[in-house]
Image (cartoon, rainbow, N blue to C red; front, side):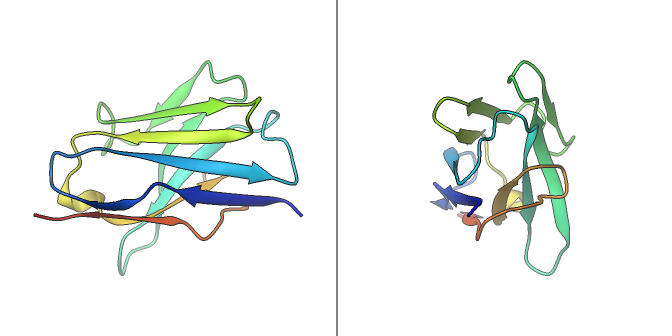
Length: 115
């Protein structure tokens, strides 16, 4: 069964950092351009970042550009998102998916930014 499991979220103060991980099982992520998406309370799903299948290209929403970094390890079947200089408005459930719509996403990992 194809599955994505996100982890690494938590409670952090503004300006803090977190590293999110996404573990894939039941399929190989190698052919896919993987994405991270998020959903804040009461809002719709928002695309955050994407990375090409070989990891040689990455893309970011304007709201996170310069603060977040996406990476992947195809051998380990893992995708990562480094979150730096976190802001209160980054508070959301974060998911990884096979495309910018977050297809195949797991249960997510909660990121809460609060002082």
